[in-house]
Length: 115
Image (cartoon, rainbow, N blue to C red; front, side):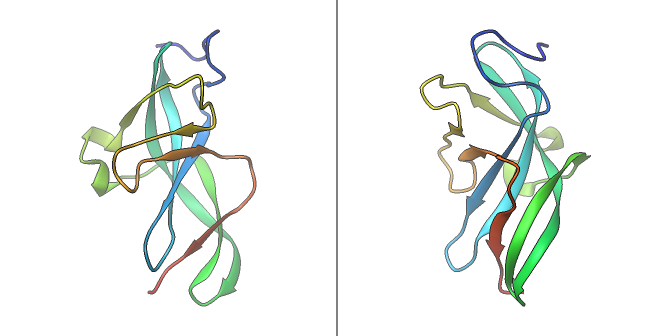
C-alpha cells in the first residue's frame, strides 16, 4: 500500500463525498484507505450536522476515521474502489447515482431529507 503517489494528488486519509437524490439530497463522506498509482479505495465515514436550515435541511461535515457501513456499496466493509483519472483530480465518476465522488474542500455540504 502507498500513502501518497508521485503521479496523483491523492493521499491516504483524503476525504471525498457523494451527493445524490431526487426529492432529497443524500450525502455520504468517503475516506481514502488504500492507494496505488492508478486506484484509490474509499471507505464511508460518519458525518455530523453543522447547521440546521429547516426541519428537513442543513449542512454536514465528515468525521474522519469514524468508519460506517454503507449498504449500497455491497462490499466487505463498504469499501469502494475507484480508478484515478489525472484529468479530473477533484471528481471520481461512478456508474451508479450514489458513487460519483467529489473532493471535500473543508466546507459544510448541503443535505436534505423528508424524515
